[in-house]
Length: 331
Image (cartoon, rainbow, N blue to C red; front, side):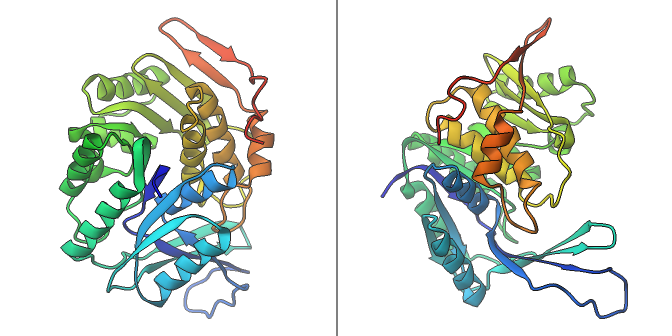
């Protein structure tokens, strides 16, 4: 059945997380029992939307026993998904926490090579799964050998089907999509700086970079994640900023995906963009409270949304937007 939000993860992973008393070279490192989660940008975005009470369908290629396990984990969560079968083996990503200093080490494998036929099949499945006026979210890295122009082609085809394309990628892939025009991008500060070719130390400079992309027709909106500083959301008509919440991180895995999932959860219901930013900040912060490769929890998102502040930006001042009376309307 067509879905209002479809996510596409071209290079998914089985996320494995564990901990060890101390990481040191040349020694056998005895680890805690591992945790397994279905992973990859678009898959995580869909899982967050599902946790918040929305609906999203995750489309992804899957191959071998690892791909089968990833699919089984998604099914166990009750997350609607569609796997296209490939010959290669779905990759694993490995996260280890050093308990002596709580430092996280993240090991990311490259993933399988997709044949042209496998890639075409996956792209067509994602386009066909969407509904007119709905969102198609492409998030995560491209598999080895996939040319960035394929995202340009996907953006063009999504526009022809009246799908609002959201891109959370970087480098040549993001540039290719912008050339065709998309609905929203979610870069971090480094990615945006690389995209526009200059450092962006101030809010004014960051907003100008976002508006340059919007005015140039590359995207209708930019959601700029700023780590501990918070985030900025810009459209052609308005812009908002939200400072980061004071969170002591347990793990940083999945914070960006949680941010994007919550933003789209609000926007898909035709919610106010400022309210979307509030929930995005809350979800990204909530993900920091979850161990290993887990994502944000609904109860943490709703609690932190009450603490998040959003400020409208204009040329002369920033005006605070208090929490709305229906801030918990998703409950």
